[in-house]
Image (cartoon, rainbow, N blue to C red):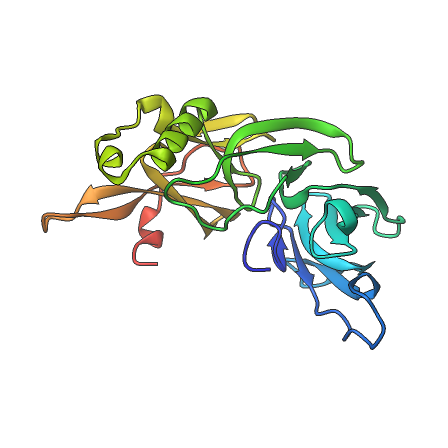
Length: 267
């Protein structure tokens, strides 16, 4: 698992906790993937002290941090559905002596908001810039109950920011036409505004920001985990280059920050 909102190292939206998946014990002869034992350690980012030391069994498919809980997805195979028998185990970070709870799932844990888990029917790519696949993600409470869903999603970023098409149907229809068109037909295809309009949404604070024509890059910001939004600008040499437009925090009210953009130059 690489760097992602559900990878081997994740940070909570408020930046207070860091969770690390440690390498599991070596699989012994006769043991199956379901017999694997793995430690997951949650640290306080200011003090470096251990907040919670969790142990899970099975194949670890992913993890995520809300501001108050650690969620670890395990399975009896390398996928959660069917014979994988996926399970999400919840460890409290506020009542660290409390016993963990768990619930079954056939979806992938792909991230978290400040208080909810984000699950998807398939794994999402870490980076997607062109003709991204579109899916609907589920928002779950930490007891496994459904809190909502978001359609038109192309990626889930650390800290609870979710990138989506504003009009999923228009975007999907255009992608389908592009896939079935011949090479010559594809040259004449031009998407409507509705087919390309994209947003960043943060369901925890009910914030929606238009980023059509821009890219969103995961970045450390002054408040902790966040996103740097860049846009193409002329470079004076007859072409364009990406320059910072604003940055977003995962810990405040979600407004675009335009101060101190120079800190992101040439990073």
